[in-house]
Image (cartoon, rainbow, N blue to C red; front, side):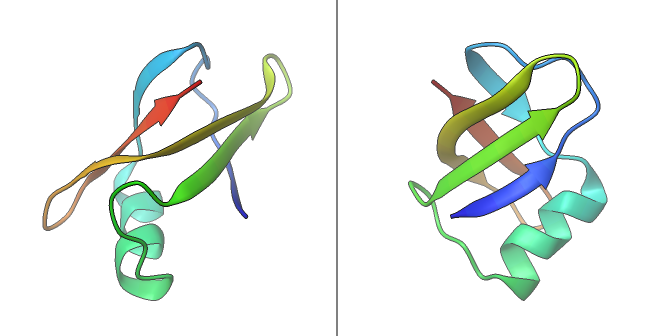
Length: 64
């Protein structure tokens, strides 16, 4: 399972990855839509989700 630190507040629903995270997820790890992913930070803990949409330089995550 891929885990990424995400400074913005986390809550159920859609979350946008920043450009650096998007590049890592799309071009280094080569994840595709529906791939599982985990976002975390010190305020909101860890949230499970999946890649929701993918564009050339951006990716969105649906958090559960």
